[in-house]
Length: 545
Image: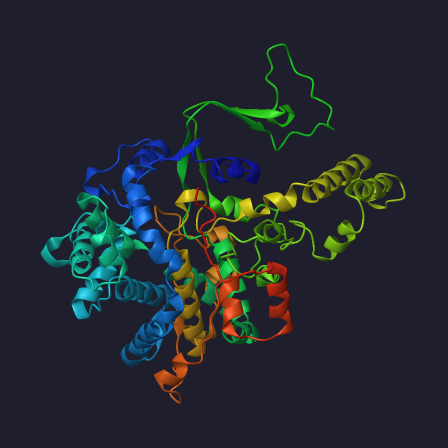
């Protein structure tokens, strides 16, 4: 799916009867044309379609993820992160590879917060190794015992065994205990106990965000991220745009024949001449016909870099989210309809200075004005005609007009939300996104608070010389894996006790938390006013159908 209008048709509200998610096995067969490996059979909730097992799990776990006050675990997260930073200092003088640290920290946070277990020594190291191998299916350690795991177990078998063991003995009130006590079929409980060990999005989201913070040699960005909890969320949101956690969303299959409007159709254009047997070009078809059984899938990064909807998409620009800093939005209130129509990212790929100009005129008058301007650039008064030729300049003027017409189209603002999907879309959106964002926030803050720098001040080559797509490892990975290592140094602030440090961090991951935080500033007051918060509800489940 390469256009947000079609993404909306597949993943939008009320589409669950038209499109059903494929299971992992069916997706593997569809995308790779190869049979799924029976050794990797997994029926946890993420890997199934919209079957009864998924529904049982979703119903059982939604209250925990949507209703729990995760601010209550902030200090526990700070403690775990600081322990790993202190370990890096004592073992290696503070020098380490960044993904090594964020991955180990995320696994430790998941185990302690969701299972209420603190694994130590070889038990923890073996779990980290097994998960690192499992999320990299191209790794040779996935099947054999090259990682020297107990009993020569594979990465897949080992982490599933650990998940079941610690989950079955989890304390009451933990996610693991809820799974064990729920109505989820018994054969699926161990599957889901193991699955949540694989929820490692915070490791990669924090990796990319920390790296971009450190590429600013003045240190001003790192300082602002640490001190401004709202700007911190903008940076996290921008990192998730540039490096969405997963390479693709699971395919959906059409449940019936459908016909939808063609977003590429332009009635103003003259139809092209074609032969007797010629087919009608896609751009000239008013509708798109979809047959039952058609499969559709989305690669988030393609839409996250679509220049029709993003200005300068290859650049890390947290300021693009200044009017809409939170990934999690207010849901299910009287103001939702108004809130969702806020023009938060300006007119797609245009500079923000163009927004007010377009608002002040009707679009037709605006297009008429720019049409006259570009017509003037086709004449001899444009000196470029003498330099590059009349035909070239005519083509470029027409192309510039078409580009501006598309970027100011009436659907641009409506489609903007369907160009951004770091946590998935629809009923199968990431269930644990509220907790995941808190983990990213905590990791990012604590690394900056401990004065993290690139090793010897050297910016890794993937940020100094490579484009965004060259920074990602081109192998079979579950997550967006960095292509190159990022070596860092952390310098703990010894003058402060952990207790003092833990009381310093202020984090807000949505508008409800913003209001409750007690933070006072004109910027934040304006954000709250625009959001039109009417109550304290924070049901982040508007994508439930």
